[in-house]
Image (cartoon, rainbow, N blue to C red; front, top):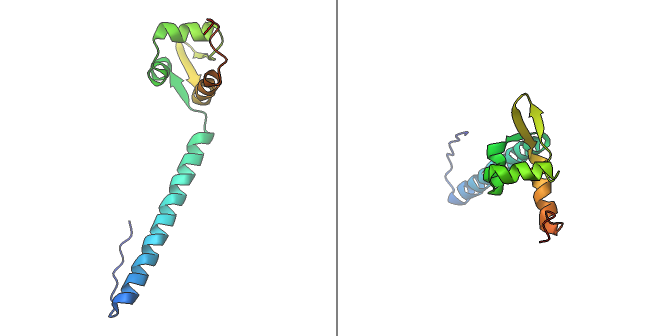
Length: 105
C-alpha cells in the first residue's frame, strides 16, 4: 500500500485530500478484486471427488451414483476422477429447479 504524507495548514483542505485519497484507494481495490473474480471465473477449474463431496455434502457412493445416472459428468486422467466446477454449480441450479434425481421425489 502506498504511503502519502500530507502537510497542510487548513483542516478542511486536509479532509478533502484525505477523502479523495480514500475514494481512489477504494476504487483501485474494487477494480483489482473485480479483475481477480473475472479471471477466476473464466478459467476451467477442476475439482476432485473429495472436493465435490465436501461441497455438496454427499458421500462417495452418492457421487458415484450421480455419475452413473449422468447427473454429473466425470473426467478421468489415469486413475484420477475430476469434475468441472462450473458443471457442478450448474447441476446444483438444475436440481434446485425441481428436475429431481429419478427417485420420485
